[in-house]
Image 1 (cartoon, chains in turn brown, orange):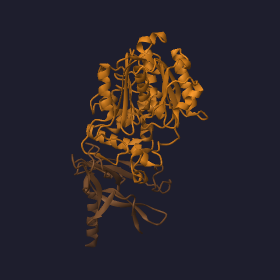
Image 2: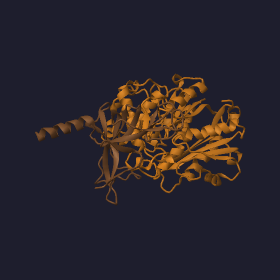
Image 3: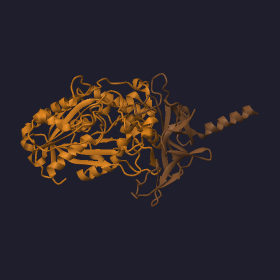
Image 4: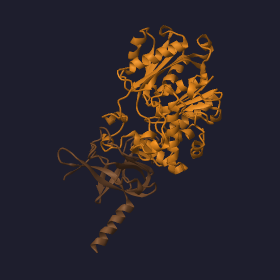
Length: 154
Length: 384
């Protein structure tokens, strides 16, 4: 299926991996996401765009248990709606970015755990495109999956 | 404040669900009640202001009160609208616009969680943020609560204790919407909304209205034998670094939220401290925020809530009674009226007229605090 980003300018692919696009103030160095021209901290204009770290730590999280009202475009009818995780991940650039989590089991989420950025197809639009958004995935879970995969290959 | 302001009349259209009654009609009832309480007529009023989220043009209310040509200001400041109305009315007196002012808040929200609306551009956000399911206030309340619980050792028992207390207070308040006390078991088995917050940890949107008549304190005796002094009324917006709802990101450095800024200034203006407050109404959008607001308003240090709630310190008969009328949890939140409902309750307490939910000792000084999107807070200190 063709993939289509949910919005332009949120992320780009570098060396096969997604990177969020933030902005860094040329004056005070504060980093914002999504990128914006004026610095919300020191008000200087003319920030530079920078790719943000792929990995960070989970600062806080929740699980969305009810289908959101519009403008949500994901599956929202009771039959197809699945609770999804949401969290803020703290990145080395000094910014905490909010995003969906690939994990929605509270038992598998904890503050401080390492997370990495992935792209998530979360709805197929009328033209048959998979609408992609960014999300954070627990690194340990990914590592575990890789190990299991390698185990089965052997 | 250069001119001391007094509240001389209060009115309330009880919060809840009122089939067939629109927001403006509720506002008219509350306003007339406040005028009657002060013993004045609408034609005596020098200026007025009103606030609402759902009513497109709040000053449409005037034709039902009387087209006397007075200055009228419509105000919307999110959940802090009520406090902003009173602040605007008192500033109008200070600015010499007249002596007798009326502030009215009214709203009537559709059922279900508050929607952020269809177009996120009006909130300074990309549409993707809503499309991907991130633009929901309950998520923020839950995530701020979780982090606070983690940082300060608060357990989910405390969340439930807050809810038990507020529904118990609501059961004692004839004006409350939710008049049934709920057990901890009932709260803990209600559906999860956003972890760690369950349905009965949250307030719901509702309908209702509240109104106040104010004048300079020096002439208050003309109208009432029990004026309530507005000792402080402070509005603040967030600083860079504050954790606020509908934020795709926040800086990794934290600063105290707008409530802390407003609260500190309010104590300074009133010349008192949190230890002098006999009764407080704080924003309990959900149980987590009542817990955080206990500390943000200076009633305890971060983390002390766990012990305070266990000993019942915030119950009506406790050391620092909080949300004695049941708060937002038992009354729901008609946004435009909610802050004035808190002030109404504190006025009742100061007059000793709160009936079954009256604090059972002398109440000389009261406190109100509202907080909401996009990071605004308004605090009042009231005394007699």
